[in-house]
Length: 278
Image (tube, helix red, strand yellow):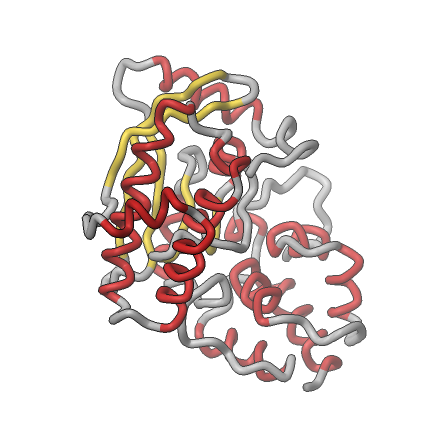
């Protein structure tokens, strides 16, 4: 581990990337060519003080999750990401989860969807990256699997009308079964199944049906604190190996959601920054 070199590497990567590349709104009085330290911290989901300490070559060894978040925020390629992990004394993960490397083509496409709510998730529904419109619509991302939270945390269901909950439960379980098979029943996905079977009778009953279906698209009603119920199309674009997907939300033509999503870009995340939604 070389925290001094790690700090230097973070500084050079931060200076290299422009606000536009990172999806950051740049004001007229900006004096630095790259990102500010507080902007990197915000994009990576860390505290500003912690990130400053990292750049100074101080503080505790960052976790794999923090390093992966910094790699995404700074748009590091595969070699740069591996170097970042090496300097921090970590082995770059090659498997799944929130520490996995986001596929560059998907991240480039996400960067261009600046007015469309969109996010990149794994096949276990872990959020890897998310744009500002998505945060405004569904709340800030979390590091754990949405499937796990759906069946263990009742609060995670609050953004959907109660009448829609049985439908979402079914499609999440069906999609998870497809993911487990695609992974050849690996340790991570099977551990999730075992854990959820123990924690949720609803999950166990749905899993035991044996039903399977990849979730390629769906119609969702999302409860927004300012706009009410927003009825949108949710579509998924899959990576070649099926392990990552770009999920985006659009309004059906001529529906009230067209105006609601337009207003969403005005409201932004200012209301969501206080109590965060699941």
